[in-house]
Image (cartoon, rainbow, N blue to C red; front, top):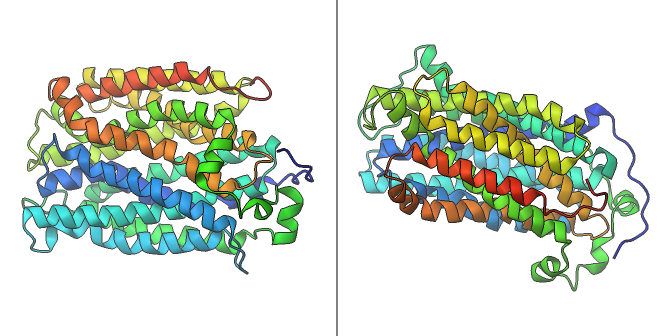
Length: 439
């Protein structure tokens, strides 16, 4: 199946940077979602045992949207490029929904209606974020040669985490400058609402920058460096692509299952966990719970800072699988420590360790998979399908979240231990990945 193609040219640092810069704004939006969704729905009136069900929607939409965007963009050629049009449309929709979602409790709706409104807004938000996120991965697959892939995805990881650092800290920052962090029962505080507004503005500005700075190859140039997928497009479908996928596609996917299940539980239960262990309350109407919600953003920002720092270390490893596995072990230790920390500042230690796992999860899987896919064609469709290895574990974890929470004693902080065990299992699965260069 391998085909003779010209080697893709080396790109300068700034060209690699521009390919992924818009990810900075997309990640701010994604971070606001991941850090505040449980807080928003708990504030609107959701029960902790049903809270995880709201987390089914984001990965479900990602699983549906990203393969479609990948497949359609493989066939798209416009004056603006083949991937960038999808990026711009996705970002525009995300901005609109970010202005609506945090106001779900301010529209005079009943508790049930507010939860349904919030759920629908979340569905559209995650759909649009996924639509905006996928093109960045495909741009690297299209335009970056094999030797620079790890560097390109490390830059993407850095920008992703830098955006997360800002997005996570927004509610704490707005509270610090005097924006209200409490509100009437069932209403989302202004500190969260303002965070979504500013995040939406940054998102659209970053995406505009990318559309101006990045010039995708035209069909003739693209064909010189990539497998001519168009020749195989008529007979190819998703099932055939999956049947022909390299072994590494599935082996990395197994690791992904345990990693993303762990982080789904982190996003879902951190606010309730630290509200209980640090602030001593599980009452979502209390000021302590809302303070814990702000601090969730801060510890997620610390996790992101750890990921930014660790992302600079990852390229120094000679053995990619060793770097991947070691990172997941460090993250597992971090998760296991969270329930035993009762000081808000000491929480920085476990979340720095969790950041090591996050950095590896953002950089390593796509480097391993895109290298394995060289010569297979259909890069966008394959990466869209590979995104299912991110979405499916989150869906499974979300559906089982209430059951698992009951099994471990209904204390949300115990879900952090569940997450740690999941990462340890994922680290063992790394060594089953087969790579061409025995990395």
